[in-house]
Image 1 (cartoon, rainbow, N blue to C red):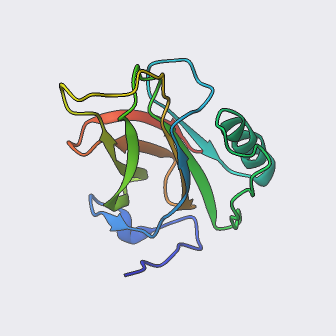
Image 2: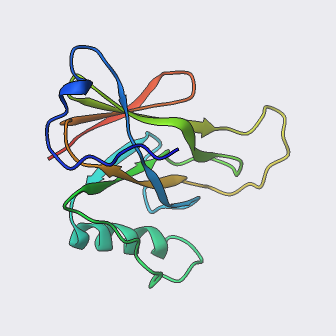
Length: 161
C-alpha cells in the first residue's frame, strides 16, 4: 500500500506524539563504500549535484561501472538518505529496509533498517566490507532523522537542512 508523499513542509497530523507513516523507496545499496571508519554514518542529500558526487563516490568503490545511472529524484518533494554501516572485517553484513521504515513524530523522522550481521561461527569471506543503503524520503515535517536498527537501537542521526 502506498502512503501519500508529502507536498508541504508542515504535517499537523504527525504532531503531539502521533506517528505518520510515509512512503519511501530504495534507490540502491551496496557492500563497499570508501569510508574507512568503523562507526555508522548518515548523510542527507538535498540536491542533484550532491547526489551525483555521492553516487560516483559509492560506485568507484565497487566493481560496478562508476558511470552507473544515477537514481532519479524529484528534489522539490523528496531527498535521499545515505546510511553507511561502517567498515566490517568480513562478508555477511548488510543493510535492508524494514516494512515499517519511515515515520515522522514531533519533527523527527525515524528510519528503521535491518542491520544484518553474520551468525556466529559462520564461514565467511575474509574481505573488508562497508555496507550502505540509499533511500528516497519525502521532504518536510522534520529537521532530524534518527536511524534505528531492528531492535530499536539508535545507530546514527543526521540533521536535515
